Image 1 (cartoon, rainbow, N blue to C red):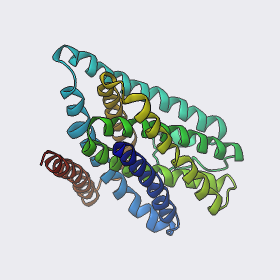
Image 2: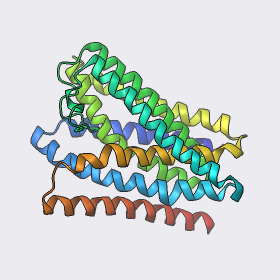
Image 3: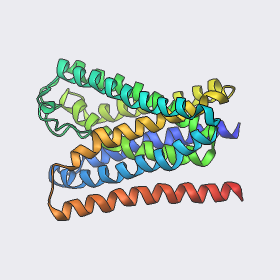
Length: 274
């Protein structure tokens, strides 16, 4: 039962905190927000990749027999391709209900700063809430699967989810405000959508607890999700600026994200072993 409490706490706190952090971030003046956002994205890239390669993938392979290695690797591959298809559908949704000019030059990112929200309708805001709720539900399932495998893996996975959710939540806020929602309603609906993370985590606890053989494959899908988000969505946004100072800052923050997650994972592992 204590494992269920862990899942509820980390899915709820991570989801709500990411929304609140994004809400506060959105209140900053445009110049400050645009200056700070790339730093957060750089850090999130390191965190996501570290969780995938330092935590999720090793844990998944340790839980299966050698003859299952190829199937598990295939799951990661299928997951990455699946998330590509999913994002294609999301791009279509934005183009159908809003403005797809931002995608024409492959310049889209989670901040939605380049025109996603320009002139969008009220229905687009509703779709954003629904889509965010589904996305958070899946995150909850993946966090739950990580906790069922190992407590410290669940903790660092939830931290990585929160890290990459903040830039996305900033974009969602921008779209909702441009769709005609007040700041209080935008905050309320974003928090409501974030709570589906808890639902996903709780359902994972009750449905996956007796399906231990499937847990490694859920971890593989979680890893493929993190890898895809970092490599396909976040990293391209960093290439908009190529000056030496910015590039060194990006490298330093990505490294900081990696080191933080790896350190937290190792500390938690030693504590758990001790």
